[in-house]
Length: 538
Image (cartoon, rainbow, N blue to C red):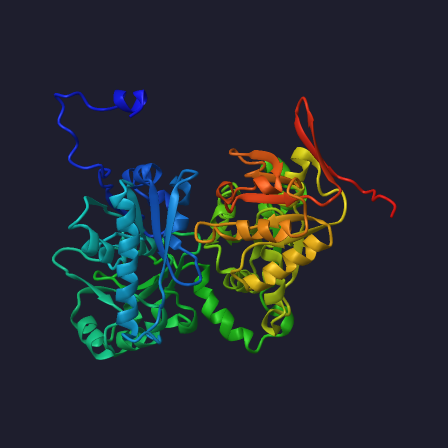
């Protein structure tokens, strides 16, 4: 035992700890309210900022409303657990059917969060509205609260937000408010609406046609109002009978107030949307709403100084931002600008969403890091735009500084001659193809900029890359390892190919592997690297 080890042992009179396991973390059920980030409670905002892990749900499209609400209160570097539902309708090939698929998902999600809690990390599980009011949080609470400390932070429900949007009381005196899910059978929904003093119907979306029919059959349709995305910048208030059922999102509710409203219901401009759409079927082409545009932008690799003025203007003019959560968070929040953040694995869905927003008049900026045309969103957007349905939507791509240029600049000019860019990710192409391209470029004696070299689930490819290149390059070939260049954790090292250690490489790292003409030399300011543009005469 070393001297240091001995000095760290407890005194003889002190009983040894019962277990070396860390103290379990705490599970927080965070109620975020109906959508407006300013309606998040002070306590919820504090816990979001303090938690070790932020967990949130979304459908497969990757867009998490809860994560978007909480973003303003999160701190850089927090761990995130994105819990993606395997299904959102009852169509599934799971052997247990829809319920079997959902139950399996909840068990896996609970196991993921339990691992963090057991390791001593606090977990803030986000829930739109209130965590115990038609919320996914309750499924995690049932599975975890008997093993770990758990605390609920209540949130403002969409019922309260919808009432505020209408500006009229829901109930008064001895009236009873009935809350109904739109998923009830139509006959049961009709019966309960007939008997209710006042009612709200939640879980709309695809259920709205049967909800509207039930309101009509119960004689309550004329007294019912539809509130969509209450409290947000996209809030709409319409009469329930005038809603286009094809465009009803899940986050909408129908309200039947108990007392007769004594003030005018503040129907928004969206009240005219239904009538406008009807008239569009016979209106001339020039009278249709203007189509917006999609601009795919590159922020540069890290520093705000590397975002071009052209890109900055496009971001400031956009009504909507679409992109991977990490990149969206780099863009300053602007009042009234909508932010659609999602997981990094849903590029096609993200592109389609951006084009659809633009088709309905939005000015959309699709945000990438680095240059959008280099292993980023430009390809996904342009490919999706080839679909005939998007033919009239304008698409522009604004370039940005790519990570290869940024890393190269830190050490000199390792990409000063012919070079290739290769992504080491095999998520969209088989490893056999990646390996074939590595060997081809290595044998062609070009420098190589390697993107996406590793991730938490993909760690072995760096060693495979090194071994493939060593078949064609000398062990002392210069290698530049740049991590988070332009960011707060920037580090740049120059080493040799034989010294390349996969343990030093992660997803935020870019590698530059030199050619036979690449030289590294020492200066008082550090190592400098260049790839000569001159070849020896044969």
